[in-house]
Amino acid sequence: MPTPSMEDYIEQIYILIEAKGYARVSDIAEALQVHPSSVTKMVQKLDKDEYLNYEKYRGLILTTKGKKIGKRLVYRHELLEQFLEVIGVNKKNIYNDVEGIEHHLSWDSIDRIGDLLQYFEENPTRVEELKEIHRSNVE
Image (cartoon, rainbow, N blue to C red):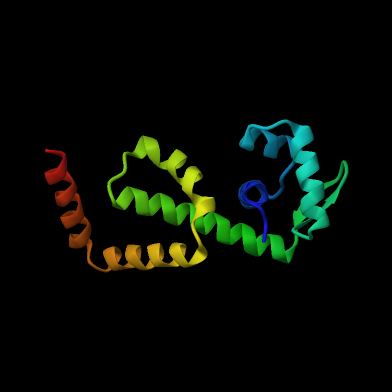
């Protein structure tokens, strides 16, 4: 399994490739707010661990393994954002909160959060009831 840092890189590479069709070292560095030399080192490690194929000066592509993990990491991130929004977390806090917790939850916990969101989606009045509880507690 990839480390949390490796997950951040795989997730960002996956997002860039989905959006632009490619991911350059400079794009990854900008998105993750790190130095290009740090990206190059991590990309080489990810290549060694078979998450992607990297050729210096030619770019990189995710392997099947890398794509599968990247897709799952993006799903996890989006699911957690949706969960925090549904339970009433202030929108300005959601991104940083997700970044803080996403690497610390098991996939079992992620799946249960998905089940809970599905429960809420099946009957939108449940979300309204939850929001009403939140409003009552704030007052």
